[in-house]
Length: 194
Image 1: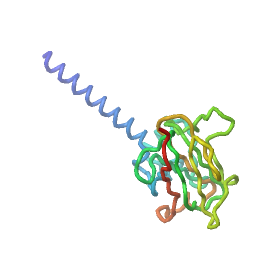
Image 2 (image 1 turned 45 degrees about the vertical axis):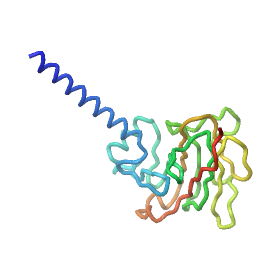
Image 3 (image 1 turned 120 degrees about the vertical axis):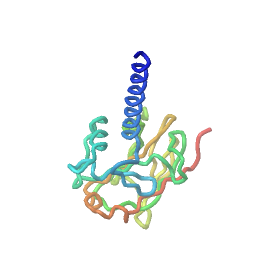
Image 4 (image 1 turned 30 degrees about the horizontal axis):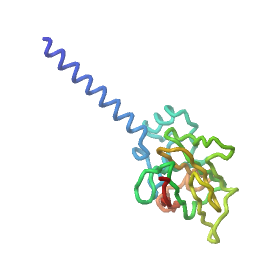
């Protein structure tokens, strides 16, 4: 009798622990149900709509974010560079390429909760479309680094994992089914502090 009770408790502990761990992993992963990946960038186009999957709804509820509807915009998150390495705050990166059509866009360096990195300085770790210099072909070249850089510079400070969040507002790609046809900028590692 005691043996059966012990085996039942062990089975319940494994089931509850494994289930909780799988939900935790699914809610933290940038890939998953409803995700669309374009290069290093991942988006959840249905996250602010009634068609959102249960995991996307749970992610929004857990993080307490205000999700954009399809007509409002679309957010892309990058957690890796073009070589597949995890983005680190102590490294410098170069974001280069064209951006999809949008009335306005923002780019910021984020911590693990996808909140803007606190730089401890007056300059936030964020850029927006009205303040960047563009290349002759209308593409952008942005340096993400803890050290000042010429041109477009996005400040990132500290150490540890970093995410880049690129949000397009009032854009036709948010309501389009042709998300796979758009191009997103590349993220290339330029070097790391020793």
